[in-house]
Image (tube, rainbow, N blue to C red):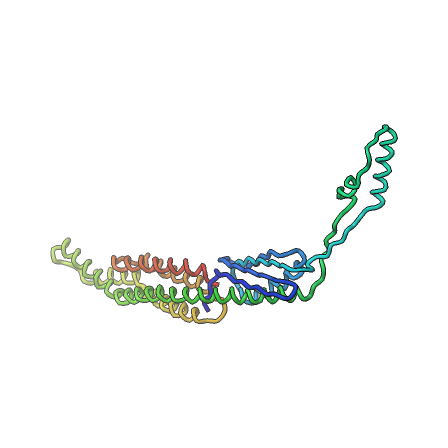
Amino acid sequence: MVVSMTGFGRSKVESEQHSVTVEMKSVNHRFSECYIRMPRQLLKLEDKIKKQVSQSVKRGKVDIFITISGEGLVHKNLHIDWKLIQDYYQLVNKVKETFSLHDEVQLSHLLNREEFVMVEEMEEENEELEHLVLKAVDEAVLDLRRMREKEGELLKNDFLTHLQNFELSVGELTQHAPEVVNLYRERLRKRIVEYNENSFDESRILTEVAIFADKSDITEELTRLKSHIQYFHSTLMNEGPVGRKLDFMIQEMNREVNTIGSKANDSFIATIVVELKSTLEKLREQVQNVE
């Protein structure tokens, strides 16, 4: 099945106390990677979230953004170091007495110092919130998957169009290939006649033509190309990720086309080879977007 690696998914799930919003975006990547940005109190859910995503996204880089609003996310405690305050107060008084100072110790002098008074935030266990987050992630993944499949359907249609053009060009080569030897025979005969004043050795011509035919024969390459085209078609219809298979098939097809180009001693074949390479390049660019 052709699925695009690019897409976007969003979900918002609410309860009486909390609201969870999950946004995901995926882009092309050689492997499967997942990056999550979320509040610290949810870090223990990271592995569960990645497993949820990996069930639907087999390839691509996925960025996930999780935001939470509501009450009871953290519990705050006020911590006062009475011993330190007492020691500080005694020290101030001693300094005043030693240097005959008359300034009074103000309350703000004590309460505004962080080492005396601290507010501690304690993360609270909240199973309901965790369930809400996982539910929102699941819905966002489904939304992302739907978009990737929709984009994949467009890619599939584009593949079929380019593949049809490629197949037509291969058909032209198949029809023209037998004529290459005949054309070479006629050119060779004409040259020999011109240089030898209508006198030539037919056996020599046959030998030269046989050597040329063996070197320029592209039958095997055309047969393999047709086989690759059929496999490409069938792969497009397969379930599961197909991007790596399609990429490999394009490499194989390109290898056969290069071999045909190196054997070609014919202007028509050379022109078709250029068209085939152009079509393969378009296919290669699109394959980079497939999961």
